[in-house]
Image (cartoon, rainbow, N blue to C red; front, side):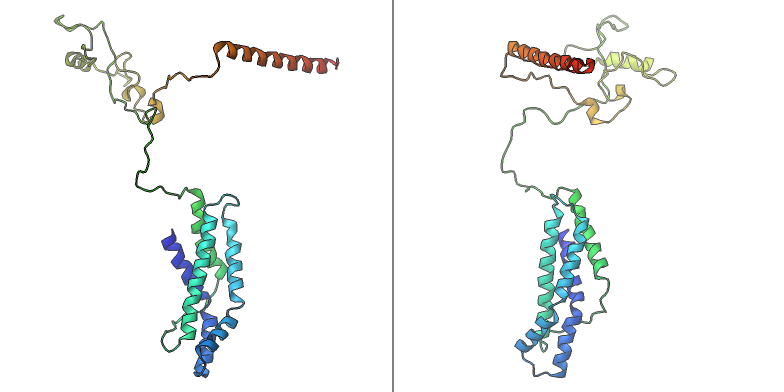
Length: 265
């Protein structure tokens, strides 16, 4: 962003202040005996008002930024100030050293506010992003108490301990290692996983695999539950007593509300 914005702002400054710079050079053309100090004095008089107008335009476009906690607004102020200093120094060098520093040809400048708005809108987009990036270097390591990723099989066969092979030599769909037997898989595929309507038959696949969930690829569908018991600094007796006290206060409040409704208070 900075690589695009700062050159655009600098060009805006140079174009905007080209006219007062040319007015000083016109005086030098008429009297080339003017010294560098005299030309600098003429330049300072020529740019007395334009910076105020430029800064006013830069402040007006601040309406595009978030009013509070904007990460983009400080950058905008910094880049405008930097561009203003750089652009003015370019013209100051040209008007005080006319013999050695060439002055470019600039078209008449117009629409300062519109051009400023175009640049400000791009910078304001930073308010929608967290642009503070961490270094690529790893300076600390934090152990993970729980996994932040999970692996889900596309197709997983449900256990069927009642299944027997045709020759009766195999009992159960899975072997001792918990893997589906090739003979069982082949038999189920021969019968078909889906019925005539294209619906998956019940009981064949693990309900937690992707295929059993109608190929739903939402990661949240498969996030494992964490059954870790949370430790508490209160005993069960203290928790029950606290609940009873809370219930007592609620009932007391309801009794008071009922009395107010019935006109007894």
